[in-house]
Amino acid sequence: MLVRRLLASDETLVASISTTTRPPRAQEQEGVDYNFVTEAKFRCLEESGEFLEHARVFGHRYGSRRKVVEDLTSQGLDVLFDIDWQGARSIKNKCKDSTSFFIVPPTEHELRRRLVKRGQDSRSVIDYRMSQAKSEMSHYNEFDYVVVNDDPDEAYETLRGCIDAIRKGRPTYVKDASNLVRSMLEDLD
Image (tube, rainbow, N blue to C red; front, side, top):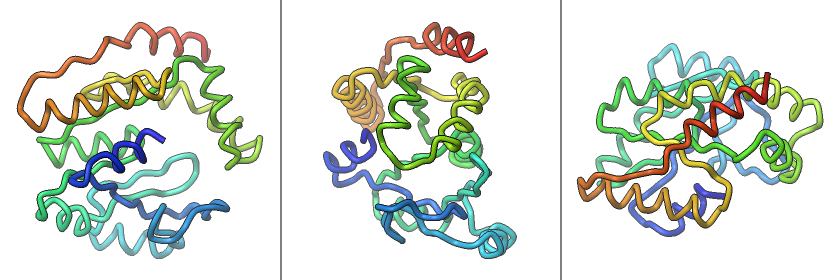
């Protein structure tokens, strides 16, 4: 939701469409939501160095194609990646001028509610994702900014403001969410 709003509000901001081995969900379209490939095809792309970043997330492989990203940035566009901590770490190591945002729900209960509400995954997939939440969230301090997505409008305005400030070379401030994340990590024990 946040990503879609950001993209809709800014014609110089584009999404990197990840390549994945995950099967498409009901509403997803090839080349729009993801590029869906087999495990063998993914390995070929990986071995030939075609990924800027890649990782295994929740049992499936995801990666961002280097040439696609380079083509977009050469056109003066800013590329938005919707990736996990592994991908963000890799991007940060390769693209020193990148900025990373860790988007976190306000509570563990709210995370589960949102996963259920979107209606895309089975109960077992949701349970698995929740079991991995602590591990995923423990990497929050590797990101430049942590944004709590409690109120969607407020989270959007925070991200929008950060992007604008970064583009102008101005300092930006995001309310410190480290206590909230640490509290959630304790709750997930």
